[in-house]
Amino acid sequence: MRNLLHFVRALCATLVLTCGIGAPAFGQAYPSRPVNFILPVPPGGALDILARALGQQFAQRTGSQILIENRPGADFLIATEACSRAKPDGYTMCMILRDSLFISPLLQKVAYDPDKAFSPVTNLVYLQNVLVAHNSVGVRNFKELVEFSKKNPEKLNYAAFGSSQMVMEWVKQQSGLMMTFVRYKGQADANKDFLGGRLELFYPAIGNAGLAGDINSGKVVGIAVPGNKRMPQIPNVPSFTEIGLPSFEARHWLGLFMPAGSPREAINKMAAEMTAILRLPEFNEKIIFPGGYDALGGTPEEFAAFLRDDRKVGEVFAKLAPRPE
Image (cartoon, rainbow, N blue to C red; front, top):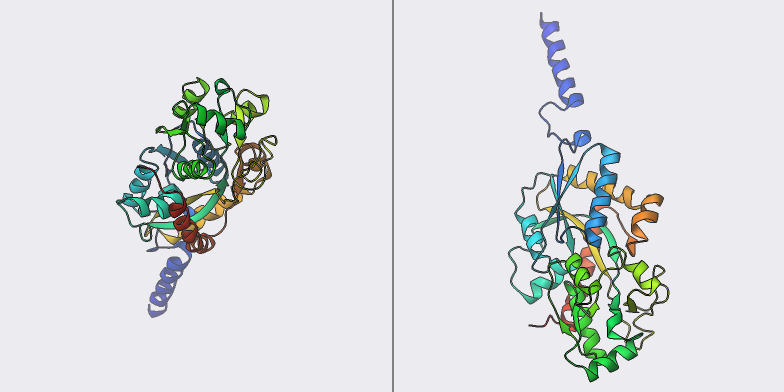
């Protein structure tokens, strides 16, 4: 009888170790239900397209769904605040830009602690913008645009989002370009007005639907891309340095986060899956290159180290081109 009792106790201990009795319901089973993905943009724009493509690949790889929740508005802050309030159970993740962590908190009061409210998962991409002009303006390059604006100081309106607006205000300071900012809820709405001729200038992400093709065909005028090199998607559009502006690092990163306190198993699993997707050759061909992105990825620890360094860039960015009132 005593031997039988020892055998039963040993068998129970083995089951606890091998089957996970009494352990958290993560590990290989994660995710066991759909994961909610909060986006700071409306449907239809470049970042929404990227997020949905990531979700489709994730479903193919894991058999689990990612549910997109678009929460646009307030220069990305609505979505970021929603992320900070979400349940930290591993089933909510969020797309967050540099703006929400290192720029907006310096310029206004926000309803979250940028240092404590989020757990870094992985850095997704660098994204690139381009300044474009509607053909009705009648200019073909940056020099002509500046000259036109000085002769017609109230005729040029432009749209941009988040810190991209700061870049445009910096361009105004450096060149004397005269244009007025118009606020839109998302890139899709601004793009509709731009293509319809109701908005003269636009500074969207290159991956905005059909934009590269419209520039290359001459349907819209590509004025300049930030930085010191041209983009292969729109090779005829000069860089900022080519048009005479000072060298300026204006690329934005787009990161994946979960609410602070989310399970480490969920964070590591999502980082590994998203990094693997970003490095798929076919994903780069169909999504990354057309979108004008540089794919990143990596471990949560690597992303956390990146964020510590990038905080300094964000602080310089905010001081260099403060958001207009």
